[in-house]
Every structure is written in C-alpha cells, then in structure tokens.
Image 1 (cartoon, rainbow, N blue to C red):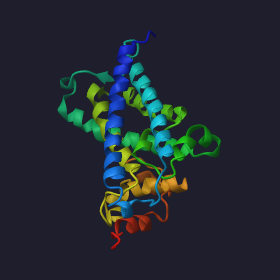
Image 2: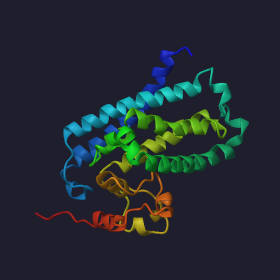
Image 3: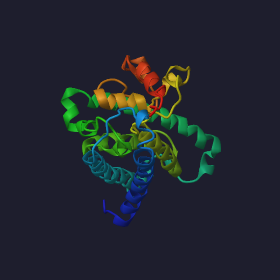
Amino acid sequence: MQINWDFYWNIVTKIGSRYYLIAGLVFFVFYVLLKQSWAYKKLQTKDAKTKDFIREILYSSTTVLIFGLFIYILHHPAVAPYTTRYLEISERGWVYYFAVFPVLFFMHDTYFYFTHRAMHHPALFKWFHLVHHQSTNPSPWAAYAFHPLEAIVEQGIVFIFYFTLPIHITHLALFFLFSIVYNIYGHLGYELYPRSFATSKIGKWINTSTSHNQHHQYFKGNYGLYLLVWDRVFGTIREDYDQRFEEVTTREKPTR
C-alpha cells in the first residue's frame, strides 16, 4: 500500500487541530482566566505541574498521529471499497443519517467500557493504560494522552463502525467532534453539571467530570465514557460517587 503523505498529513491536521484548539481553549479558560476565582471549584484543589501538562500534550500528539493513520487506512483506495462507507446522504436519506448517531454513541460507549476495564487488568495495565493514569489530577490536555498501544485500542472502534453499518463520510467528523468535547470535559478537573444532577432520573446514567476524575485519582471504578449505564449494571460505579458529586457542586466561594 503506497502512502499518500499529503492525504495523511491532511487527516492528521484535521484531527490535531480539533484537539489542540478545543483543549487549548478550555485549558486557557479554566486553568488561566478562571484559575484564581474558581480555585475552590476544582475537583482536586491541588495544582497539576507544568511537566504533567507537557507529558499529556506529547502523548496526545502521538495519539493524533496514530488516529490519523487509522483514518488514512480506511479511506485508502485499496481499503475503502470494502468498507460500509457511503458518499451521498441521498443514498439512505436524512432519517437514516440522523438515526445513526445514537447508534454510534451507544456502540462507542459500550466498546470503551469493556476495553477500558480490560486494560485495567494487571497483565495489561502497565503496557496499555499506565501512561494515561500518570495524570492522577488530569487536565483537558489528558483527553488524548494515551500510550501508543492504548491509542490503537481506542481507535479500534472506527474499524468497527466502518465494517458494521453504513456510515456517511461526515458521520465520523461530527461524532468525534462531540466525542473530543465530552472527553475534554471528562478530564476538565471541574464539574459543570448542576447540583443533584448525578442523582436525577436522567443524570444518574450520564458520566460526569467528577466521575472520571475519581477514576484518575483512585484508579478503580467509574469506567464509562459518555454514560454510567454499564458501571451501574456491573456494579463498578464508585460507592462514594454521589457523595463526591454533592460535595463539589455545593462548595461555596470562601469569604475573605
């Protein structure tokens, strides 16, 4: 398979710009502009170190290259005809086009939960997932901070998408735009959902920054990506999650 470097770098540029622009903007807002005034809201009140941010950015950059390679392979003329990709929305209509998004959402959340739990197995953890857990107090830059082996696992969902259901060329762009935004929120270090959200009828099924921050801090429990459905079904939700969410969302700004 001959490599078209211009095409590959075009893909990498799109994936990378999405990560750097969104993560960079969120980091600037919460870790620079609001650092002092919102210090009391931070999930872990201690500050991460500059070296942690640099490590997260460097590993994320490697992840961007790997993600780009996967997309390149799937769109290569030697592979693309064998995928379920289609080019014109009119081929399947707008109803199908929009109906695919919740399917992608559930597939990705399920894939992530089970691969994530698998990478926490002692035989796999240090080879796949330890790099990501070096961020015990994660920042937005940690969203893509994976060991190359984990990056391969993470991007495996794209192959599943492209070989299981008809997918338009814009589905991935829009879906993974949402994915990186929610992933950055998960590693934000601040909780944005309101008080009592985690115990509401809908909110108890939705993953939060508090939940994922606990996962980074304690290494166990809260394995979900977008949802907490599988965590609740299999009993891997942390017992102190609701209490922790209540505590961080009811903090009051200290008076001087």
